[in-house]
Amino acid sequence: MILSFFPAFGQPFPSTSSSQGFHSQVRLLSGGKQGETWLAGIEIGLDQGFKTYWRNPGESGLPPSFDWSASENVASVEVRWPAPKRYEDAAGVSYVYSHKVVLPVVVKPAAADKPVRLALTIDYGICKDICIPAHAELNVPLSDGGSDRKVIEEAMAKVPPRQPLGAKGDLAVLSVQSAGGDGPTLNVAVRVPSGTKPVLFAEVPDGWYVSTSTPDADNRFTVSVDERPKDASGPIPLTLTLVAGDKAIETQVSLDVSGQPR
Image (cartoon, rainbow, N blue to C red):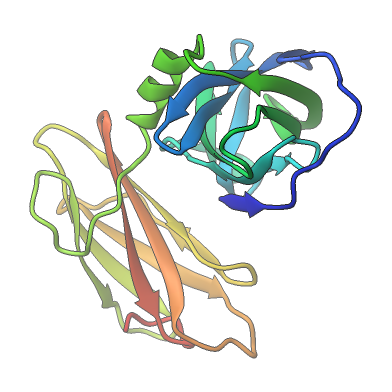
């Protein structure tokens, strides 16, 4: 996710880098410079038994939303996403984080020679038996030698790298093919390391809805297009995040307006 805006300038305000919320705590991390950008991070810590949601929450839940508009000397902000877990209960299938998650953030300054202050208003969901909206307002100056760099780099290593369809390696999305039948349904074949059980997350643009099965004995998934806009125009991006053990990759393919692979 990348947000761009004009820098906001106003009266100085005190640094508030952490906030205690409902069964959760949020921290805004500073990781120092990386080339022409700055590294930062959003750390969400959760009480035992509670969870929060990925950028795509699945069939239920609240994805986090970010407002960076009060930041100073910031041209753009990109949030990176470590792979989530698949969670299923009576409400359906959701894509979640538990215990603690750090979302790496890459910040481009508006002026390279001026100080940067990152300000975040975040709304997110906290869920155990029911889902509760949570809110925090944080800010932190970004400076060389940021104390949280190691934590941010460890989280960055968990962000699934992009790779093409059919790539070599022990973890890959091998093919996406039409499954036939009445509705738009896809068969997705994957390769995973021996002894691991794969999980697949499928994402489509707003207005489209898909559901993903668990894998069969041959590590094949079924992705069903449950709903699509009547006025849809293609091609439509389908982002597939494949997770197996402690490894994850992201592969993007295209669908036509009927929901079939191109």
